Image (cartoon, rainbow, N blue to C red; front, side, top):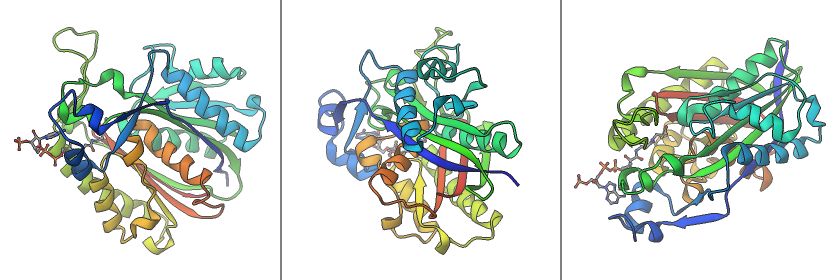
Length: 316
Ligand code: ACO
């Protein structure tokens, strides 16, 4: 049997930090409201010269260095993003060019905030099926470019960043299983209109409280599904690495798992919601600061526009 194993992680955050107090100078909100309802204190915002591909490549370079491999060993690049620099070439092709990687399949996956778990699942299945031996999986987003900075319901939440994971084929898991879901009937609760259609500006629209309710319900079912599929109990999880959308959603899912918050990687306070980048950013941070150790069991989940949601159960 073939499995995939995480051999390196990396991340990138733009240097510009935008605090709640700065936001409160331009929209009708307060630091207290944002912290109480979301747990967010600040977020990183891309500069005019940052690109989604450039941030992805920076995160990937760290992952490659952490794994200590030659870049030309990489035979698959999958990038999760909803904010690509161009309709085409794909962000993955731009990353391939920036990293100087030889010909290999390279493509993007669009599943909004759930994108990283989708991309990880795709790469895992390429490796299990024998089509790849070394896959680069990245989540990279510049959400600040699709935000209406006058809409206090969304501009307080979203942010920019990138995270990357390098997978290699292994004889033991690695990734035990991935679990993906989507339900298009919720398409009007969270969406960004296409910039090609001039009827409305291409800014994200969200019915926040409705998204919140569905997210809490679906994520509770999802994490149970991942554990049941592997006949594991919640006591076997060492670290829960959730999508960083809202601290209250994270706390509700951790409560469902009966996990203390000490076992939950939380970056939403400093990073905001970086969509497809949020999970690999949190993963990389907890690996680099020494919390996550080799051999530990990790549960990753994410939820976003579509709605689409997904989870991955992994031995690091
Ligand atoms: N500051 C002050 N007041 C605000 C703000 C703000 N920034 N935003 C909204 N309000 C007001 C509303 O206008 C409303 O006022 P009203 O009662 O007078 O009408 C009141 O606060 C309550 O609004 P709600 O939307 O019910 O507030 P809620 O507690 O639900 O928090 C939030 C809003 C933070 C957006 C929350 O609903 C949320 O996090 N939702 C989920 C977001 C998410 O998970 N998205 C999924 C991933 S994103 C992706 O896939 C791209």
